[in-house]
Amino acid sequence: MLQLHSDEPWDFDVLTTSVEKSDDALVVTDADGTVVLANPAAGALLGLPAESLTGLSVDRFGRTAMHVFQRAAAQAVADTGVEVTVRGAEVRDLAGAVHHVDLTMTPTMTEQGRLVTISVRDSSEKYQQTRLFRGLLEAAPDGMVIVDRDGIITLVNAQVEQMFGYQRAELVGEPVEILVPDRYTGMHMAFRNGYVSEPRSRPMGLAGDLHARRKDGSEFPVEVTLSPLETEEGLLVSAAVRDISERRRLQEENDRVKDEFFATVSHELRTPLTSMIGYGELMTDLEELSPQGRRFLSVIMRSAERELRLVDDLLTLVAIEESGLAIRSAEIDLERVVREAVEAGRPRAEESQLTLSCETPGAAVAMYGDRDRLGQAMDNLLSNAIKFTPAGGRVRVVLRPEGSQAVIDVVDTGVGIGDEDPDQLFERLFRAPTAVAQQTPGAGLGLTIALAIVEAHAGTIEVVRGAGEGTTFRMTFPLRRSED
Image: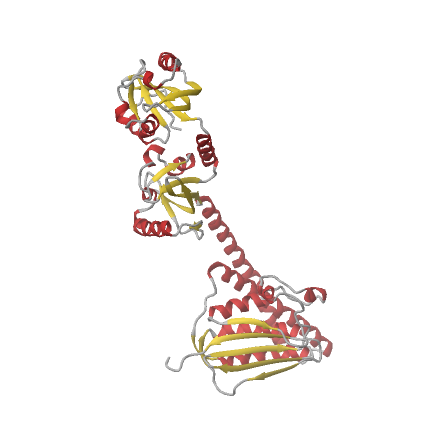
């Protein structure tokens, strides 16, 4: 409701604008009960255009003796400056129909003297429903803006006033673009017209790229949820506006702390691990090492290499989550990438007493891609196949062109994936129950990274269930076209 009880006198022109834009039926009288101002809502209730009510006495709208009390109450309010509420009053419009209303008479000091503002509220069931709706609107934690199908603001709540710095009277009746930065106005109007033709609940600005404009011209990031409201007067659109400035600030602070942390991880872990591996490689050339010393050194080297791969995987995963996986695409020979990955995995396969084989077409398989990233995906798949295949088993890598695509199968004779959902295998940090039960080393990151690499190359990766034991991971990539 429009708040008119104030210690500071109102400028009459400002009072007139505020009353006219109010959704409540408002009549302003002098101390004698003569109407000096009324708004369209009051005119609709009393059966006359608002301007025609000016000069009439409130006596005209009473029923039986009630009008005497109403006039007396208005005079008392003017004299004492105390707000008075009359519930269950009966008001007769000029057509003779009777309306059951609640009247709130508020002293209103203006530069022209003390007036009385009478708020006329329908106490019928429809009014109670309207009052409940507006109460819920006011209680909403977000700013709520209700607009008609032409984008004209019809209703706002207190949160909008606080958020945007406007009084309600300054917004009601204005285009909703008053709240939108100028650079977005044209786009917003086009979106609004499209929304009206196909209304449905729809969130906007979830990525933080939507901004609103305050009365002072400053902008702030928002999220907006649009919902259609079907009413007797036609389609209205409810916009829930949430200021995400604080969330954005916290996210930026979180990103800064995370960047510092992973920079520290990269330096404090990678540097000593790289040194350990480097010195370990130098020690393998020493003739003084005993067979037992060489075995110990081999264990140290494997452990250091495993930890270095884990650190690299963590840093890669962070990069993927922050801004997606960056690839440096160039023309490459996929067959060479596959063969090099197999040769790099052969020592691990021999240590695990596995047979590792590679089947390729024997000719170059040309595609555009990032050689290092594709090698990383191959390494991750081979590492999994070797880890989950018992001694005496076999791991095969098969590369074959199929039309405009290249298909790579990594096939093992290991424990298989059982009844697990294949999609779960690519989730971050997911480890199959068999891996946990057998205490197989791993952090559940390799397949997540492989998926990101494959998708960055417009490819696909899937698990192919076989008739027997074992697992087949299949990667598919688009080949370079002959005219490229």
